[in-house]
Image 1 (cartoon, one colour):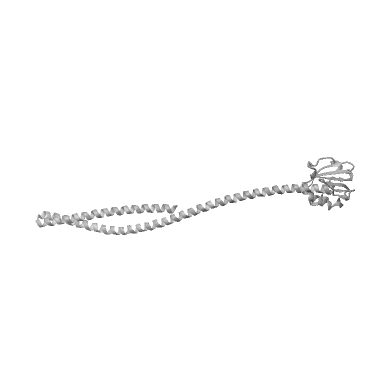
Image 2: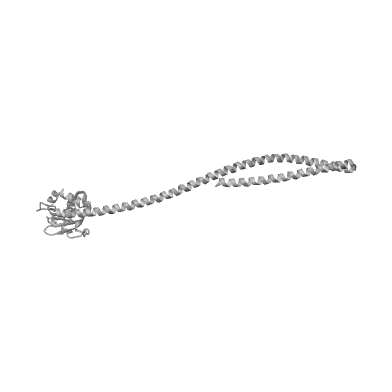
Length: 280
């Protein structure tokens, strides 16, 4: 596309700050150039930094003027690149190149760039970089404080969980000891119960023997009564005394049996409590 066809057309909005504007005055007729020539000049002049430059407008006069915008912090890089490519400016018949407040090149002035404009532009660039650096440092400090606070919070939470875990382990150890003691007590009770069961078997045998003797004595007593003998009466009284003794022994056996049943019930209750503790 001919450059003359896009004169005075706004390609992008320019920066309102003079320090962020590049102006290139080219001593050529716009009808002799194409739009791509502008991009070619920019790429050859500013090299890798050209991608950060935005074309704003191309105006016509005795020649044509290219106006671009750029980030202020790139001032030094752009000025250095332009000074290293003076031949590109001459080849493309550039009359003057200004970057911000600095006149980098002027065809009839061998003293460029001007020290005053250069220093002003670089000072502004450095000021912006300093502000950005200060903001970055502030942001980093805030992030560090946030990370530190979060780390302290995590540490407190971890310490709390460790304490809870230790308390839980201690409680589990106590329950384990209690369960062991209960189990030992239960084994003792079971052993004691086994012994009493053996005694109960013996008492049962004694009871059966006493009941047999009681039946025998009662039978003999009836025979003695029928015979009516005094001697037999005395013998009956003796048998009555023996029967009373047997009854006393039977009552003692019954009491002991009730005691054993009560002990067995306590053991079963203790066993149930132990099972519940172990299930926890």
